[in-house]
Structure formats: C-alpha cells, structure tokens
Amino acid sequence: MWQEISRFGKKLVDAGLVGSYFGNISIRAGSKIIITRHNAPLDKITENGVVEVKLDSSSEINSTASSETIVHRKIYQMTPALAIIHAHAPFAVIQSLVESADHIIPVDVAGQQVLNEIPVVHGGIGSPELAVNAGTALKDHKGIIIHGHGSFAVGETLEEAFAITTQLEYSCNIRYYVGLAGK
Image (cartoon, rainbow, N blue to C red; front, side):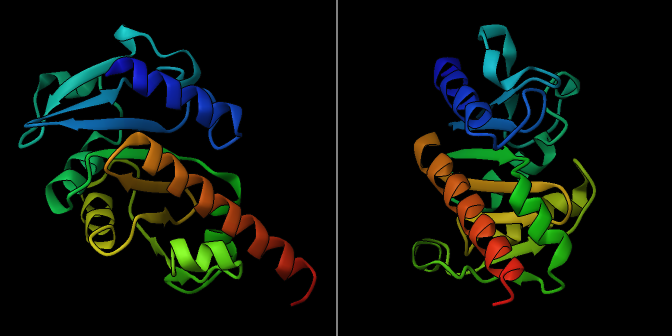
C-alpha cells in the first residue's frame, strides 16, 4: 500500500498541488488507516514514510503520523471513503480566502458536473472541530476546502481522490481568473 501512497504523493508534488513537506495521504484498510508520517516528503515516500493507526481510537503511534490523522479518522468514520488526499492546492486556498460564502460554486462545466459545489469548512489544523466539520461536509461531497488551509478529497481509491483534488483545484483556478476578468 505504501507504494500506491508514494505514487500519488509524487503526482501531487509534480502537479504543484502540495509542497514536498505539506499535505497527507491515507488509505483505509479494514479497521486500520495507512497514513503518511508527519514531516515525510510526499514525493519521496518509502515504506518508512507511512504508519498504520487504528480507525476507532488514537494510540501512541499517532504522534509519528500526520498531524491531520484525527481528520482522516473522522472522515473514514463518517463516510464510506476508502482513500483520502489532503492537498495545499494554491487556488483552493486563495478562493477560500477571497470568497465569503460557506461554499464555492464552480463556473466551469466539468466542475459543475463533478463537484456541483465545494463546501468551505473551518477548524484548526488537526483539530477535533476540523475533523467533525470535514467529516460532515464529506458525507454529501467528494471534495472540500478548509478555509485558508487546503483541500480534502475522498474516493474509493487514491486515483479517485486525486481526480477530485485536481478538479477542485482546476475549478478554483478558473473561478479566480474569471473573477480577475470582472465576470
């Protein structure tokens, strides 16, 4: 499983959706979560770059796991997701800062079809508030933006979560430029 996480970590960095040391990726494996380690460079994940944690409770190993483990855990508990990608996609962050609404409506056709709307949720990094807000929003959506922080995307596979991440960023990019054009 770490190989799949590594593949998508590199894709995220190569696409400019995260800096090497930002963001995190996880896969649900039954009653466990395989998640990137805290401060592991996503474009250089090895077997030692991931950690296995329990789905239903925290443990001492959580201190080596991503700082967003609590959020991943809550999303898995509240949704049918089997894979999660948290990116620091630049245009998603920008749109969350310039829009005052609690959601962003894509102006591009693909974004409208795939995402419909993108909830913007609040909460501190790795906080219980963010965990509940993200889990609640992802019950009805495949992708969300955390105000000023980045995106979370879910799927049955990392491929699907990556596709949602890229569509979310593309839609925010288009919306940004349409706004600059005064439309």
